[in-house]
Length: 84
Image (cartoon, rainbow, N blue to C red; front, side):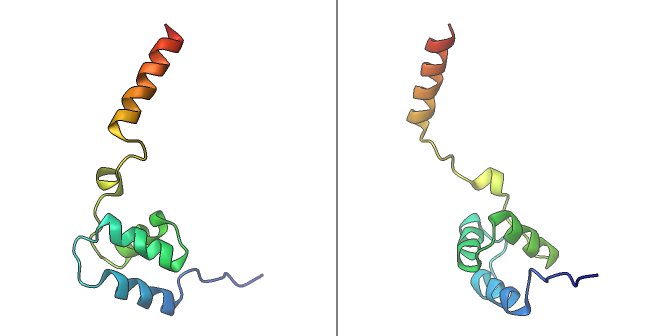
């Protein structure tokens, strides 16, 4: 049987803790910064923080849509015009 590779090294956890500091709850911006710095997904970062018993802001509630409000309205109008 092969040995399972450990995703979260002690060094990665230390880097994560240094990025988020004492912030509570940990903001979406800090989660994204940690993900970029460590090369993990934001979901993985948020999950690890929760396992470390840190409070993490809801990614779904705070994440801004990739489309602007005007772009969303434009897409809805385009969909409506095409399908009616």
